[in-house]
Image (cartoon, rainbow, N blue to C red; front, side, top):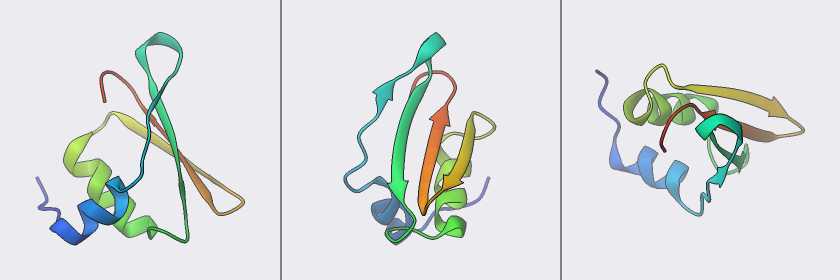
Length: 69
């Protein structure tokens, strides 16, 4: 498992609010100006391995976590 440096974690997790989605999913949006795609991938791989999907639309990452977030 890859190690996520604290700076990555804080830049991704700062001001992130999860919303309940259908079937136990958790959903949030993060501005691409606040985090790079590589930082986001490192964070999600560390904390939600194989349990997430990401869509990028108009500089906003929309993240869905399957299971409890």
